[in-house]
Length: 501
Image 1 (tube, rainbow, N blue to C red):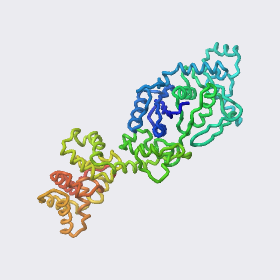
Image 2: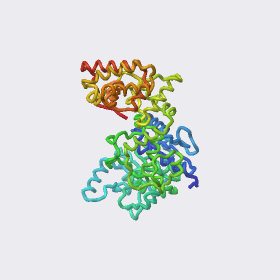
Image 3: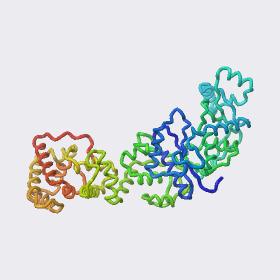
């Protein structure tokens, strides 16, 4: 085996790219980059009924969004191609011919229904429900008779049925499997397509993969893969099986725990660098209490020895917190570049910004930056900066806007703001506090109705700063509109969502 580290990410294009797929890709990438090695992208499309070109686009898009690149693959080529399994069928057939010719594999004529029926009988007897080897010792005449019935065989690999197979794993240590408990797996389907077991062994050897880093769910498969490698005279790569990722209730991660496709997190407004950081800490620790780490820091600190055996918990609240921390640390001008497309998509701002308009947007983004946790926060929570077409939240209506005193407060605010010579933070604050003093109430009893009227919400950044970023005439129009609606009891119905970042 080559001294140079070569890892691979080998997804199946059969659906969305789940968090577990992205996590595996990331750890392969980290290990290769840490050791100056090569990352291979291989597409395992031997599930010919479920593989789709659309799913392949999702894989490319998800990896690119996370910032995971590869050195060899279907799109860029390389010395070990082709990198799509359906284009390598001849190679798998050659391996099968070798195994059958040496008596290490055999044709099986059993139907799936027959195999399942015999497994049920074994279960009833308390035996492991494995394939019972019925076709492993057929005579030539018996095979001819079965073929005369029109039966098409698959090919099964003859596993060892005595002794143990020991998987030496870089994370789990030595894992021992009893060979007597394992049946003979199918390695070539009737369609001529290989199963996962054969294809992965043949391809990993052909592509000179030195380290197999994959999810712990594949650990039992390694018993079969080691025996196949031995039967084909292939050297064993090193194995490292990553811990499972569970939901917060410690069950298998699923839709009920929130988004599970990596592209869904992109659609929810997560930053790729934050998701990269978050995923790297699932099952790995840098050795200290730090949680916010740059890409370069993660690469330099990463090691398989620091990976955990125990399952990791995908904490969506922590992911959102981490994303918020990344957004806080960004320069406002840089964050604008991430936020602007979201606002354009929502129809809240023009696609081409003048220098003045961009300068204003930077101030808006900076004002919201401390509380915003997702890019998607801006088109929702900050909507009032861009349009007067907003709903009054239920909380804003019940706490302030439905009060009998509110129209008078809003009228006073309108008059005071209209009389200002200048429209900026300081003059606005003086006017608001002046009304509170005149009416003998706390400043909050003026500030809160003003915020509810101008924004439709009860929470947000400094009222004086946000008003200063709005056009004065627009503010006056909002105050007058809300005062009139409040008097008439005609405030627009609000949704159940009371918002907030």
